[in-house]
Amino acid sequence: MAIFNFPTSPTIGQTHVIGTTTYVWNGSAWVIQSKVSSFNSTTVQSLTISTTTNAISVTTGGALTVAGGAAIAGNLYVGGTIVNTGGQINLSTGTFSRISITGTTQSNSTTTGALTVVGGLGIGGNLYIGGTLFSQGAPVLTTASFNNTPADGTDIDIVDVGGGVLEFNNISTLQSVTTRGSTTNRQLSITNNTVSTSTNSGALIVSGGIGSNDNVSALGFNLKYGKVSSSVVTVSTTSATIIDSYYFSQHRSAKYIIQISEGNSSTHRCQTSELLTVAYNTGTATVVEYATAFSTIDLGSFDAIMTNIGTDTTVNLYYIPIDSISKTINIIKTLVNK
Image 1 (tube, helix red, strand yellow):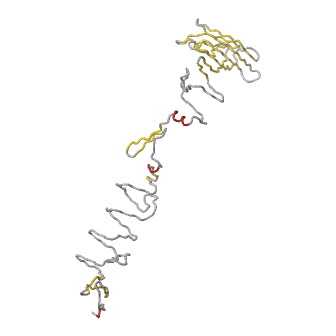
Image 2 (cartoon, rainbow, N blue to C red):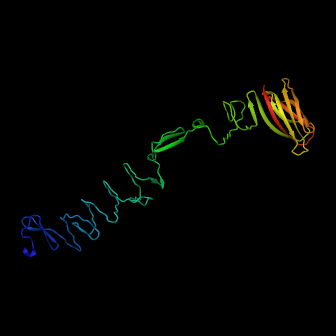
């Protein structure tokens, strides 16, 4: 054996390499442990490679090195780690106990990131996300988005309608809003047109008083035992013309301040008169003009006549002009209830 330079006093397990063949001393003889063989093509029923050297690259180390691809028609059992150095792993289906993806590429679309899935993704257990969850390009709002569990508020009612959907309802009322604060610098507009006929009717009902630091504008005021209103009419005739009226069933008497004006030039005349009317149960009425002031002459006279209209009786105030020059008549009326 000297020609092959075998050791003269080998120990059990000691190896010796000749060419591409490795021999090992078993205590009695040198036996072949491994041999590197190259084949252009070969077919074997079974091939066992007993070398236990691990591979550290696609060309270095390992009991079996394949320069090209490998086709395996049956099962493949691997006792170590499968390392992919840059190619793709394509599976039509696969079952894994655990997959760990060490890539750190962030996702900013459905085609980017350390893991991309072309189709849908079904998950039977919990899903933990260290970043933000997006759907259709928008962040998904979940209970984890809140510091605490969403709860009902004074004006918000939260209802679980099922299917993981929460319904938020606005239940605010004027009472709940003004309880938190009843002051505003906004203009309030009430579009309801209900007419007021008493202290508890109309578009706005106030149980207490009303305070105002500025003017209060209105067509009229209903008092508990009377009414104050204003109006304007135009008269261009010498005929007796009704310029105001009120219902006898509600009011018996009235006080009028009447302003008559023909225009704004220095030649136009004007007048102010103060009247009292009273209606009697006999169906007649009296008017008294107890004060008047005019620019040049008295521009007319007044009369009161009661007329039946439907089921009620109306007290009509007439104005009889001295001429047919157009006159604008402004009226402020105070009524006293019966």
